[in-house]
Length: 324
DNA sequence: GCCACCGGTGGC
DNA sequence: GCCACCGGTGGC
Image (cartoon, rainbow, N blue to C red):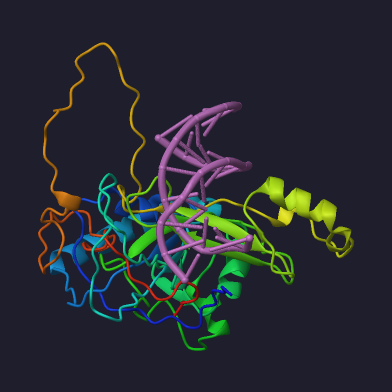
């Protein structure tokens, strides 16, 4: 079972560190039209992060600009975005040894992958993030996000009094891994479940989408869906169509969450990368761990990404379901 | 033996 | 560069 069914989200604690200060993506967040965001946070951390007022301010400024732009563009460019985040599961505290760099043999100890912990959508008007109580509701909103932008008022369905005057339910503060989800993905057929599995950091791919049929069959590509439908005409008879499936995965806001593919070897030049450079073991150079500090330039607010330790091992709850 | 997860690549 | 697809396999 894996179901990831979020109940309400409870944001975990936050960690802190933004990756580097600048997170170019932050801006994108507000500026990408209709992007949906997802975030997960693997780690644990505990220190609350408080962000410097500066950052906050800048963020606000950006939002204002965005709003302005948005108004200018009218709704043409609705900007609602959705996010999923994983409250960290934090439970335990320990972090584990991470996966070592790829070449080392080391046993990888348990790796728990991050999973989506909750879902949020950005109000098209005030740009505050509102948590969506269930995955199903999130999928419903996402399906029509372009034509039906999300507003704080929309959340009154489950939060009767909420409005743009209320503080955001969650902010991008570096404590979680955020990713941009795709808009307008069809809801899965009744009885089917669409699963998003976030991969460990440093791999070649950010996530995988799987569909689980009513009978429990896990399908990982459109080719498999087609084949499965051919083998089970009853689904087709029930109205299941291929247009109800989408294997599009969200994009992590943290660049670098996914390892880039190595450039082709150019043979001519000395391309060099230093042959000997050292890399800190796991990259953990000091970056992470965070501390409190913010150091970063303020401009971009930090959005963040996951925390620093994350790279290593994300801890999560059991895999499956943990949405919290 | 199964399967969740990962790597890798062909095709765009 | 991105992404759909799928082979391989570690870990159970």
